[in-house]
Each structure stands twice: as C-alpha cells, then as structure tokens.
Image (cartoon, rainbow, N blue to C red):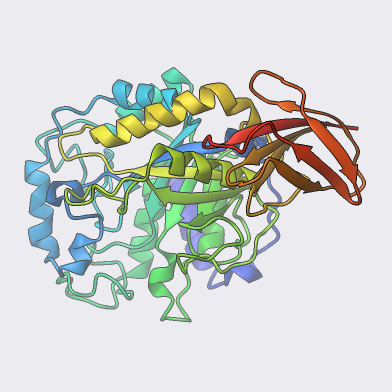
Length: 435
C-alpha cells in the first residue's frame, strides 16, 4: 500500500493532460494476447445490480427523481438478496454460450457491490447481507472458466468529493466543487482493490466520462489511471463508454445500444477504430431491474443482433438486471437458454471469427475463419442470393448444418447462390470454402 500511495502522489503531481496528449501507450504482450481472446469470445453478459434494484425503477432513479443521497443510502439497510447464488448465475450464463461476464462493481449511485476499505458504503459493511457479492461471483467465474470484467463508474451521485457534473445535481450533496484529488485517490484505491483481491480481471469497463462534457476544462486524469490498471494486471483491458474515438491507453472500443457504424440510439456517432469492438445492449428496455419493463426482446432478435455484431467484427455484451432478491428474471433465464441452444449448433460460425470479406448487406452478414466464409442469411425473400467477391474464388458451397452441397453460378464480381427454398429460420448459415 505504501508503494501504491507513492504512485498516486506522483500521478497527481504530473499535472493536467488531455487524453490525446498522453505519452504513447505500448500494450504489453499479455495485453495483446488478451485482446485476441476478447475478440474470439464474441458474446458476454452484462449484469447491472445495485441498491437501485430495490426500487425496481431502473438504475437512474436516484438522479431522475432527485433523491437525497442520505435518504437513498438507507436502502442499504434493507438490502438482503437471500436468493443470490453465484454458481447458479454463472452456470446459466455459461450455458447461454457467453464467454464473459461484466459486473457493476460500483454504479453511478455510488454503492460498492464489493468489500472495500475505502468506504463503509458497501455491500458487506452497510447491509445485513454481509457477503462480498463480487468475491463470490469472481470465485465462481474462475471456477467455471468464465472471464470476469468489471464495470466501474467514473461519476458518483453519493460522494461529496465528486465534483458536480450534468447528472446527480439534485441529490443534496452540499458542495458543487467537490474535492477532485480526494475523489481521484478514492477511485484509484478501489481499482487497486479490484485488481488485487479478485483474481484475474479481463477488463475494466468505465462509464460516466460524459458527465463532465459541459465542463471542457475538466481533466479526468485518465492516462495515469489507465497506467495503474495496466501495471497491476498487464492483461486487463481498458474500455470506456465515453461515446468518443478511443483515448490513448484504451484497449477496446465500446458502442452503446448500437452496432459499430450505426447510430440509431444517438450515442455512437464516433469513428470505428482498429481496436477490438464491443456493443452493449439490453435484453429488455432498462439496464437495472425495472418491475414494469417486461418488453423483452425475442430470442430471434437477440440471436440476430449477436450475428450482426459478429459480422461487424464486434462482440455483443447483452445486459440483464438481476432482481432485488438476488435471482435473475425468469424471462432472462429463458432467453439465455434459447440463445445457448442456438449457439450449441452455430457457435463455430461465431466464436473465433472475424468480420467476413463480404461486408454487411440488408440480407445479412458474413463471418470468417481463414478460408472458411460463413454466410448468415437473416432476411431474404428469394431463393437466389448474389454475393460480391473481390479477388477471391469459391471452391464449394454447402449448408452449415448437414453439409448439403449448394449450386452456385460464377458471375461478374462474385457468385449467385441457389437455395432450395426461401429461408424461414432465424439465420440460415451457408459455408463457402474459398480458394
């Protein structure tokens, strides 16, 4: 801890530096290997869980309803998720075909879902539950071979030392200016705990940078923070949901509610980088548990979104909001099982692939492993499909399931595939062998 305190003191004395002005970041060999493992995984599950689950109105209720921070904190006294079972969570997620879990260690409400020595406002010290939820989840992930990522909020609607941003202004904290050096030390101390006490962590998933976007001179001091993470666990990836082109020191690029290159939700107009890509999306409408939100996407919708993400060379991080009693919603468990059943058959066309040499089209996408091209037909009203190729020759075409040969005709700039019938399944997959 003494060495860490010295590191923080040096970091804070370096001065203000915008992300674009940081010293050149050279990822370690472990980090580069971790990036490839991340790209191969293709599918993860996001878990938004905190005190807000008790209100059952979503994770933004504290700021949306201007709830006083001291009154809100009283929720902790009744937080007792008696049905929480890390083994059941991880087993259900693993059966879905997901390769990693991203868990909210601390969301914007400021409550830590792990045992931290730097605040009493945590799941062990402030609740009658008295159990380190993150420790149980981490141990089970390591046991079952699921990679664990940790969400960490850069903003805080509870702590008095966090300088006010554009959210959380009505929670009753007394000083708008806060105490940035104090808050920055707090964050880095907690990050040190997360990367020291819970085994290998696949990624730190930051959120909240946008809270200070109306304060153009505000400096988050990200380069020093990113360097701390990479020093503690070189293989740990850094991502930031800031809706910008990646900053120096980041290892993945995140898109919220949008596939890369799309901006339907208004949060993803940024350019696409060469870093590994991930899109996060909710299974229903909210991130945190909301009792009135039963608008769950169908399994077909979720499968198609996963396939489209893979076709754009991106991962899908699919969110579930656990209930206040510690269980995953029944509908969410059903959707996990349905996606898992599909991946049991078609996983080879998703895991370890890259976006195919044919870019996405209205009919679907392609994924690729070496000279094997998987054509994912998601929407087609014909039995013939033209596929444009540039400089590649097709040696054979067959159905992925069953391996039945398909006829095709060589045309200018590509081939035309002839199907036996108009596709009626969620995703008809054709495998092409390229020369």
